[in-house]
Image 1 (cartoon, rainbow, N blue to C red):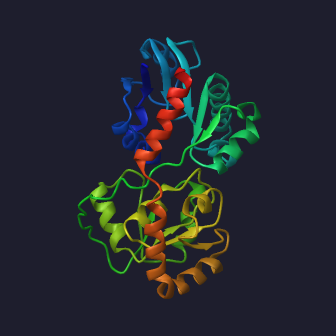
Image 2: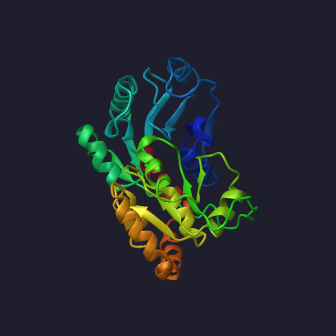
Length: 294
């Protein structure tokens, strides 16, 4: 079965992590594209560059509007944050057009959580019979040799973007010794060291399709204090200390409880994160791909 994919987002934050860690387990042809995502240029280039293939996989929802030489399509929709979270009208409008097109043209849709599945179907109920949930892996930092970072100790860690739904401003007011790592802006060797030496990862997000940083932290023995919103409890189970992301007092209580619970959080986190491997996620993707080819 000849399968091609769009790998342009391989260096983009969470979606890049998703692509990079699935590729070693999947036999796919990559489509070399020069155009940026979410542009008119990509809509001109995609139909030209996608080869004759039985299946084209888009690991994000920026799919081709125009006919291509692919016979069938699989689309991964990680979340519908563009629709659920307030943002610029033009971006929301374009995202809704792309998402609707992705749902319509896809033979199968993959998403990363049951929360995301529910939100996708809220907007696009016509995708009900196409959608499959595959949880991402969390073992990609195991075996990485950590490299130290100059940071005042002790410190708490935040990993993610500064988008408003990440809720970074809330914890900055409460935690002065907070070290912020923006998506994709630090070598993984340094990130591993930070996870292994932080007092805890603070994950205050108001919205996530999954929630990879808490699982990364858990895998390396870092306690997690996490928001109870959106998909985060699905991703993290009972392993973190949870708090209401709209309540600074609730976060303060979690911080007070951390020293007493630290050892238990580390043990529970390692046990929980070990349930998620990229090998297993890739096997589930392959099962979806093979099912389309039969």
